[in-house]
Length: 447
Image (tube, rainbow, N blue to C red; front, side, top):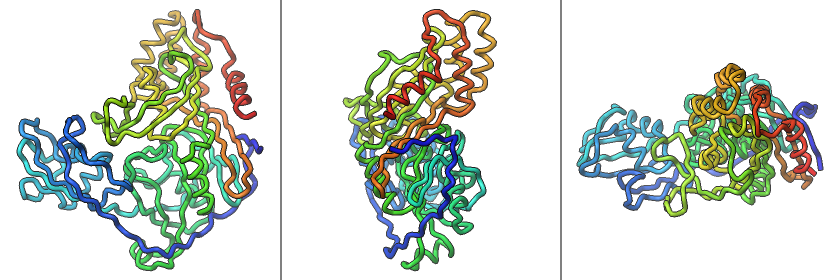
């Protein structure tokens, strides 16, 4: 078994292999009509099988008595998993009509009785430029690349994030041509993805996208982003460098044989102190950028099976916060964040899921002496992302069959918050050395 630490850079540098494809690009079109909204009890259409919404047609009448709403918002509620940005693009392309009249304003208001027709527009290819962005390489050989992703870095190009992504950095590191085109295939719920309506597909290198599509013998480069981490999440991520490795690693993720251990700081303490959460996750009907843990009785068509194991490592401020480890059995969008919210302990700094600064202050200050309040306020003011780090990653090497195991400590912003929490004097909290506790836990998992 090989064990590596992020502090030790790899001296092995190889180029990403070029993969040839002889199949032509095909667009699959799915047609359906939908019911009013996700809160409706009437039957809703299932999401597209492949997650690519291009060409989907919606013809629906707004339910009588419904409140007035923006047409982009209303349509996005009728098609499970689609982003409002995608709907807005369809509107601007002239593919949406209301009562038979083409509309071009995304803010157009619809009311009960209006007949709405929409054809979802094709996804435009995203240009991915090779960029000289430093990478924290934990391990590299001819087939796989293991990276320690910093917080705030998006994994792949998407609308609004065309540059500065991990894919841009990989193109440069592997000395690929200066630019490529990402043929995006949207997915409503992809593995640990930040953007719910896009995933890395194929990178067409060299000529223009249109020329590459027409020529079946073109060289095709596929940076193997097998799984993803949210923009705000730091930590370990594996990249496949050839097709065999990509398929093999993807199968390991599918079979849940990949070892993944995360650490987080929570608002409050989970009860019980360890457990297994087996609660499906679906898109939150009230906020399209957020996922939600839903009960089985909810019978949501687009809910996906999700399982997380957690364990409290250390408690701070008499129960105001905790250091919690998470082991994933599945990998759904925002899984840890949604399950933490379900437990009533959203991650510190996770504004989207309720881990607000106000909540942190209300939990910590009443449990700490007045002398610690200034420290708490300063610490909370610096929270700018969810306190979540992918600390440990293990998998079977796709070519050698050797089991590889990697670990890396949390970044400075995480450890600074951690150390501040441990400095808060309190009664009833455990006084373990947090770093030693984590090292001990990692040792138990690694051996």
